[in-house]
Image 1 (cartoon, rainbow, N blue to C red):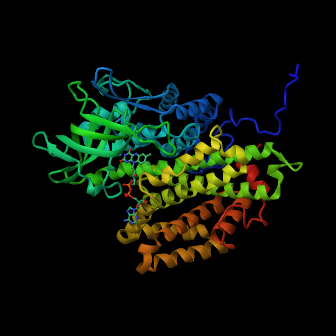
Image 2 (cartoon, protein in one colour):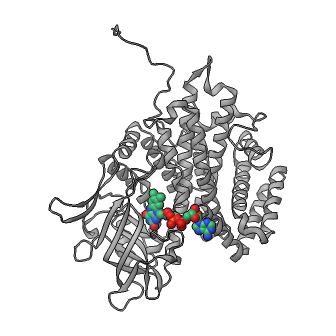
Image 3 (tube, rainbow, N blue to C red):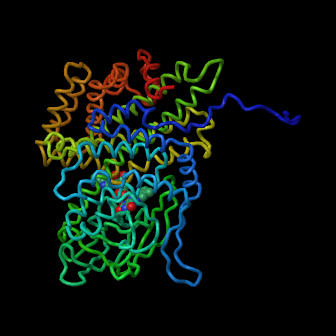
Length: 555
Ligand SMILES: Cc1cc2nc3c(=O)[nH]c(=O)nc-3n(C[C@H](O)[C@H](O)[C@H](O)COP(=O)(O)OP(=O)(O)OC[C@H]3O[C@@H](n4cnc5c(N)ncnc54)[C@H](O)[C@@H]3O)c2cc1C
């Protein structure tokens, strides 16, 4: 019986967006997976898509963020603990991603020496990452870093031999104990210090050889890191100044004798978003670490790790953008305003379609980049990987926050309250642009390729020229890019122009070749040509926005 005091009935609010298969509901993702060489993973990704989009997974994501990690520095008697406590939901998320192999599956071939990487392994892993980050973003930090640590570890065979088998398991072991007693491990990295993050050569942390020193040898590390995320990892790749210059080290939480290594965590950062992930400030008080690669070659040694994390930044941002978009379309399909569903209001349909175009482009670019990681021996793929890693990371991560803002507005007031997903996504999205090489750093990395590796640029540009074909707008845009490339005088000031122009050209060519015509036409007609725009929802009056929205998130 209705209460006599009932003031109202709730209606015209969208139902929760849950129990959606994040793979089969995402045409752009499914097509990218097939196109870029991981069709064999479709069944597995379909199963994982159901897990990541389940109401249980989303509930865990909420809990892990509402109850963020806490540093326990000391026990009640003053003894150091240096451990981090998480809500059980965080561990369940880690368990899900590790069981899926997102921390290592691209390296499975290492389990059998002499075996080649499995075709499409990076693309399949990226698809898993793209969906897992929609389940929850913060826990992906240690997952990404563990995967990315492998190529650096491979440079030091004896360290690789003891650590990589533990990385390759599908077992998440949250216990704080020596890696020798654990079934599976995770790895982090410590580069950033107070006086310099981008400029790691300014690192002051000192490494003194415990014996003779050199690759694989033990060093004593004294200093600090201003940001070191996921401090409960089992080991970290850190940079420190050895007598021969900045070098890379593997620093485990426990020493081979079973004692705890001298990492003293000072506090955890209070962050805008990414709250489920612990990001620490740490002091190394004579911590022990083992050198990876040669003394003085710290940056080239860790750069492979950084390159892998940049791929994940782009893929992860594309995944978060996708969720943001689906959330907005879902709401607008259920909300009636002035006797019409919001999604059917012409202006709103145009806004949603416009958002969808950027998600299509971000997805296409991220998965093309993933494929280039799979085909390292192919010179075209290698050139794409070198040139387009900074370009893709730059552009995809830069557009994410603006998209989150506009998508939030689609939800009206509901978008602005913390209980909803939109607010969390809005706070999360700027992060991928900041870490692992911020915007300017990516643009400068692009310049480095132009200055040092003309052949790489030529290979990529030849491919894009072919892909542009007879499309008038693509050809005109290509000429603008060529103009920038051949005007080296001012390139140090135009590196962002070039990064964006290259990203748009690449996305335009991929969409023209593979996306339905309404998507490719609208993307190229607004991003590569047409009147200038400052916000979403403009310049698409001629486009088939209904088709674009329906494809983005089929009902
Ligand atoms: C949540 C979070 C977690 C993190 N976790 C880790 C971690 O686990 N391990 C780790 O090592 N670090 C971590 N970081 C640190 C992060 O990688 C750095 O903050 C980032 O690399 C930038 O370094 P910085 O903060 O010292 O800024 P700076 O290096 O001072 O850069 C400031 C700005 O200047 C720009 N800039 C730099 N050089 C130039 C140039 N030559 N020309 C023009 N512009 C330039 C940059 O693009 C940036 O926008 C984390 C950061 C955050 C926010």
